[in-house]
Image 1: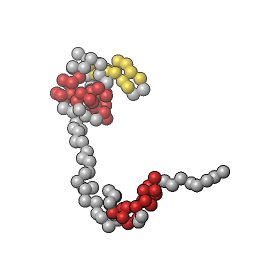
Image 2: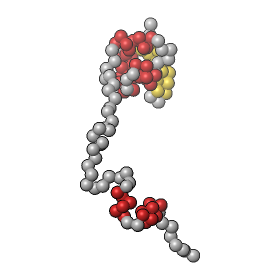
Image 3: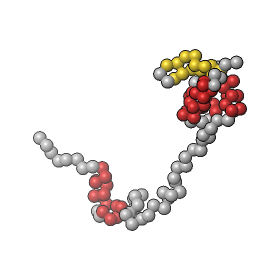
Image 4: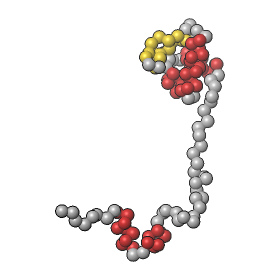
Length: 113
């Protein structure tokens, strides 16, 4: 039972070179003393999305839609879903849009004429 335990792949490669210092010198891993020069240049920039929806662009987008959902409206206008949800709820409070269906937070709205 039992037997010789298999060595991990990383251990067999470093053992084959003969010394540990030589195996790390050619690898792509930075040493402890090296500073990360490229980390500052590769930072991800956040997408700048408009926070507010203009009345004219919002109305035009709603007029062209048959069934209005928050997700489809946000995609059409190019804003976050939370911003689109707030805009549609404000229009519902003003009786410009009515809820005609949907369930569990996925409401379908219709533009009043």
